[in-house]
Image 1 (spheres, rainbow, N blue to C red):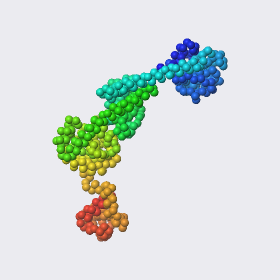
Image 2: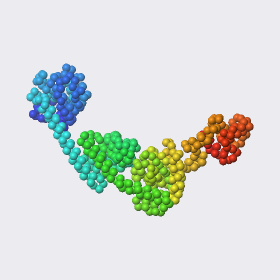
Image 3: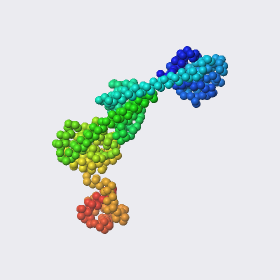
Length: 485
């Protein structure tokens, strides 16, 4: 422990005498250093927790002491018989009034003796904390050799720093906490909520959060783009030595998590193999391979979701502990097979900023068609609807498929002669076709004579070089008009 004012006053060889009442200030607060100065305002050169030694009484004691208190000075020592005999009464009164301990230093005690006592205790404490940090790090390193390396590391860290430690997994839930029972449900929720944006960022990051059981420091584990979790450590009162130990644990915990990556990679390859067997129509083979390791395949009817985006690696990690159906990575796509009511694809897309589509309900023997449906629906996905449903696409009809950049580009090219000749002509033709090509009905809607409308349609035929009396020509024109609407 660093020196305290109580310990300093107890040294008989120093002969110090407390002048303010024992109730003034905190006599057992640790002292950071001892510094001497007779400047009228030494506060710019002082730091909180220090002892100030003076020989020159201040001209106005009250504001002088107030500045020291605001700076966080722990105590003042007045050296007597250097400038004057005894400690000035105004200084004693001001210190007592503002809660600043004041002690008298006799002439025979040099200030350096006081400073040396404080410095020696500070150095001894620093050495003791450094030694503790080495021993704690060694104990944690040995814990990493146990079968459950990660659990042993976190448990030993909690024991060494005497504070709660928790691990928030890649799925955003508190997976481990030490010591057992240290975190209640409310604290666990607070940690999960604070860890979520760090995990969503996909980058190495740190943060803090206040909980019912005290503040926690948060640090992500794993490489950028593939975070493995967030380490949460109770941070109240942690000194530099303890923080050094925590830093070492971040590296060890990350290593322990990375060691499981080989097994994860093997499972990912197995999933891909099962998926490709399903696509090839080998459902029985795929089921027999999947069940012992990955669990049974979903029972039909199922829906297939095909997702893509920068976050598919993190999404796959999350699915390892949260998926209810089957999933696999196939190149740059993440494929999910779930029951007809499964909404995990939507949840996943929102959490990891993915996009894609979902097929209609189908059987395992029709997966290639289901994949085509999901990819078609994925072309219709938006920021507000990141996972488009093929059921919605099919319900909108064939003409809804025309609302794509490619279709619009072709339609604009086809209609360019009409627009160049008369910008209103495409609208006239759209009204005519919506009226099933009946001139009388369309003319009334357009507010023109039917013969005028016939002339406008004839102009369009000439500009397009097509006879609009055939159904095929009218359907092609109508599709172009819908694509540019």
